[in-house]
Length: 148
Image (tube, rainbow, N blue to C red; front, side, top):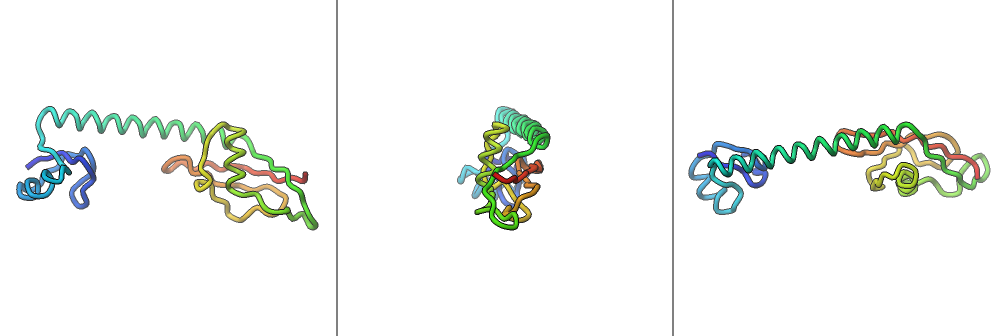
């Protein structure tokens, strides 16, 4: 029996995918739990349209992420901090501060959890932070820490 899945079903398929399943599995499990609907012309067209809209949305988001990546990688962020002896900072530059500066400079809102640093920034110098913008799109932000 051919059905269109309304949700991801482990071992069977993904959402909006048309799959061939046994009649018992469909009638006793998938249909009563509204995990799937029986294939007919109307349902097949709706599923096809929904899949196309999801693909279009993902492509648009990917293009936007690549554009943001190009914007971020063109410039650098400069932090001015108070410095103690040996060039050590009072405190450190955190992911939260980096996210705030990206918002100020590039007008791109990024969650601090999407920013990763190889080492914590506790001294003057240049650093690079990775910013995950989208699945598979990671921008490298250049950070320069200078004396206040």
